[in-house]
Amino acid sequence: MGKGRWIIGLIVLSLCLAQPLQAGRKYQAVPYNPKYDEQLFHFGFLLGVNTMNFTMKTDNLGLPGDSLFGINHKMNPGFSVGVVTNLRLARYLDLRFIPTFSLGQRDLIYTYKRPSDPEMVQEKKIIESIFVELPLDFKWKAKRLVNSRPYVLAGVKYTADLASLTKRQREVAEEEYEMKLNKHDVGFNVGVGWEFYLPFNNKIALELKMYFGMLDLLIREDNIYTDRIERLTSKMFQFNITFE
Image (tube, rainbow, N blue to C red; front, side):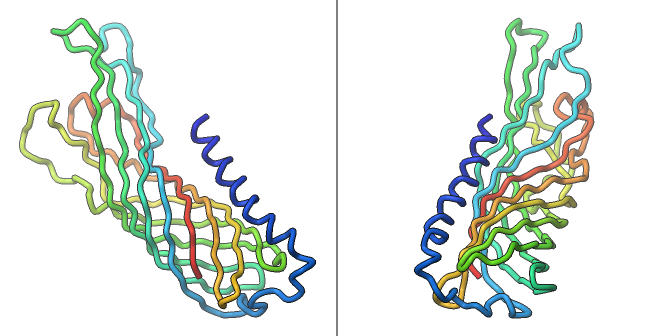
């Protein structure tokens, strides 16, 4: 429910920001920068916040005699910055390439029982990520409403995690074990946004994007933390502001 309220809130915010512009249509006889979208190329930058998370499939947990009763994942806030390159393909269709640098963190929380301890134990493994993202998106735009318009996005994205631990490290105690994920991932983006034209030959947009990775990222090392996870893929929610 928390994630749903967050997404609904961002959409309501975008619509609220759009209302004053639409209410003033009768006073705005001439749109700002009427030929802005006729440019073959234009550029800009992106600032955003993100929440990184996982989609996870586990083996049967909590069966009789099993010491591991549950694995949960938790998302945490992060931030993103990027450079916008926009190519006009048609009147209502653009191709966008936005190299982005994103920082974030994801947690895996294990609930299990040690043989020497009758009580349940919870242990959190923190996975920090530094992503270099290379998305290629198609942007479908609605007809311009004086000085604003909605749009939708869809595309593919390659990511490289610069903080990935892919090499086997020296043997350490279980509680010091660090989760290792593959460095490379490929997935797809979907998103919605609303852009607003400004008087100084530029525009600003509010954008909500979701990324869903397709590759199993987990490196399994024959221990309680990795062997009961059948598949672990990445997902990310981003709220961006673009300046173009």
